[in-house]
Length: 95
Length: 380
Ligand code: SF4
Image 1: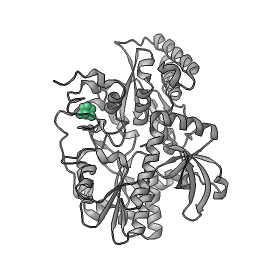
Image 2: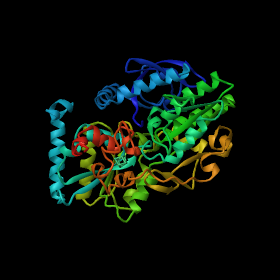
Image 3: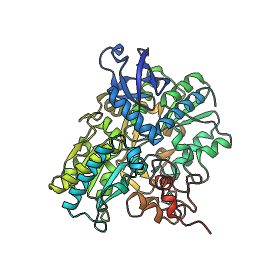
Image 4: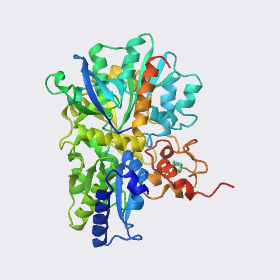
């Protein structure tokens, strides 16, 4: 549970709550970007970050993101993270 | 061959392995007189087994699998308390999926859910916040669990709840910290550790200096590492080189993600929301001083311990470990998982007895999954 998964920030969704939409391994998920925000949030769009339990924890470069994703896939962690995101959606839906 | 197909860069791995062997020989590491290197983080344990690094490195190097998996060190009493909260009228209990299968004294959260408690697996504490917004008539409790990687996310969620004045959200805070158990292990007179591989993602939050005491006070080398096989091999080499050169320092192999002084926003949130508990109980390790966090009185309204009169707020509960469980010995490197009398018999990933078998980051589950199962004779 302590590994982050790389995601690309594709849009800012809520400036005051510091929320953004991230694309994590093809799946879109709203994440909090407070930990990586410096200056205007718009500047984050297009950047890659390690996403951990719904929070962007650290900005990484694209090459690093790609390498990390491959490693996480090998470890089965990428799948696990995606399943957890799906579980989160299910929880919100009342399951 | 596993080696060629599973390493993205087999050539680099070979070079590192050869260099590791050279330095290991130089310092006289041998099969029956090994250098003990503890990887603190459960994510590293998983990587080491997945890529068979323990078998690929020089035979004079032995990995000791440390206590760095929050699910593995969760005491049975805490699981019982989670269930107690979850079974109260009107409560929606939310948790990361990892914690669902950890056995309590009577049942796990998964079993409690099957018995009718409203327990939901969430991906993020923010999902729990959203549930609280959508269900104002229900009490939503989030099980805050994990090391410094996860701690800031709960802190930020609590700050957000406070800003919104959400009255039906609280956190059952069981966050723990990495440096203190390392100190406890180093203070253990039976311990024979020669160096450490430091947790990468914890360090992304706290930086590398919280480990200074390992080098300065105990004279042991440590390299903070990433999670890819090459990261781990490189870190092993960094630790060995320090030993060979008679140095003890905190080195940062994972500098591409880990800033020397950590993440300021995360650290500020942690500091604002939590304070250190005098001591905290770890499964298999017992009480460790200053190793856990609790929510400050300023945020008391969001503290499930206060709200439900449970956990440390209600006084400490003593619950014995399951009969025959050797998790404590495994976690302190005194026993290999296969040496536990329950391994593969009373304890498998499907029916875990101890916590080290529950999470894929636990040493027993990793052993089982990647070949350890073979070490157990078929049951009569
Ligand atoms: S085999 Fe099971 S009981 Fe034994 S140490 Fe591992 S997790 Fe604990």
